[in-house]
Amino acid sequence: MHQLIILGNGFDLTCGLKSKFSDFYSNRTNGTSSIESIPKGERNVWDVILSEIGQNDPLWCNIESLISAYVLQEDEWGSRLDRMYGQLMWAIDPSNQNQSEHPNNAVYDYASTCLGKEYISQEELTGFLLSSLKDYEYIFASYLEEQVKKDDNYREKAHANFATIRDDCIKNSQQLEYDSSVLNFNYTDPFKSEELGLGIVGARNVHGTLDRTDIIFGIDGKDVAEDDPAVLFTKTYRLMSLVPYESETVKLCDSDTSYIKIFGHSLSRADYSYFQSIFDTVNLYGGDTKLVFMYKNYPNKPDQSVDEQAIREELYSRISHLLMEYGSTLDNKDHGKNLMHKLLLEQRLLIKRLDVKSYLYANIYSHQ
Image 1 (cartoon, one colour):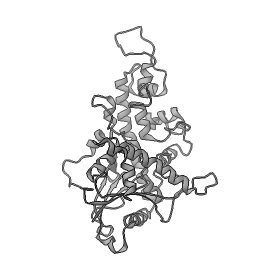
Image 2 (cartoon, helix red, strand yellow):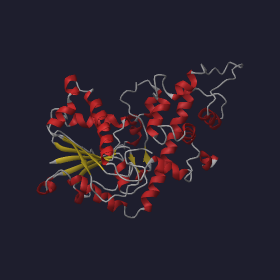
Image 3 (cartoon, helix red, strand yellow):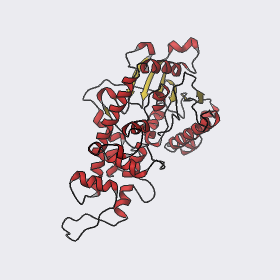
Image 4 (cartoon, one colour):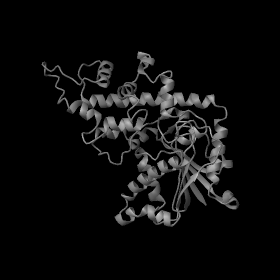
């Protein structure tokens, strides 16, 4: 028997690791969240972008949504780059000696200075954002590697929490009969496939691992046209840079997978394509696979107490959006409309609290 366990950043946070992007940025700015705390020679254009939007913006420290807003689509007017250039009706024409206007924007000014050009095209600015993002990924990976090194018990806590997730929903008499595959959305890798004591037969860090200091941030490519400049920022495109010349095939699930357990993942739109592929593989509508969404209580009230009902309702909303989006991709649209209803009737959609020792200090599903 087989199960697939999907882990998001909430798993590392539950283990006490300060792995949120906001943790990284606080560390980067010495706790000030101000770009002025970063030496000028060490600044990155993504620091400038964060400084420009401010902490009250919903995109604050949500790096993947921020990327999408800048290069793909923020609203009906297009991306922020589209608006930066389009609203000013400004076009690059090096032969026009009378051209003196350019976007009055901190991001543009920073890129212009770094590139040593007074006027840069939207294509040039997009390319600069991408190259700078690669540098930023390296900086983030270095920060996270230091956090892992500082916690001598991280691996032990990760193993204990994984075992709790692995055994949940399964009768004691059957637990040893299950093999587990792991799809890890984190950059940390606290367990390997060869650790048979954990029952892991296949594992994949989908966005890269710290041992190579080679990780990616990116956007969902499902709705990105192949000729769109934003395609360079999609996870599919970026993942190609992580593919080795030769590697062992890792099969994470198939039609015989009994459970898909998801813990600590925000279920954000940026990862919908992964879930679509997984749900297609197990024939979610017509098969027998059970979906188990697991959550951990955390202090979510001003007085640091726990409102579990609010935590569950937030998770309900995320699950509903994910399954509705997946349902819309099914060939039979009637099946798509009643997917959640069918899963609930067949008791194949479960929501369970994970009861393990907690190291949590905040919402594990938030990027901030």
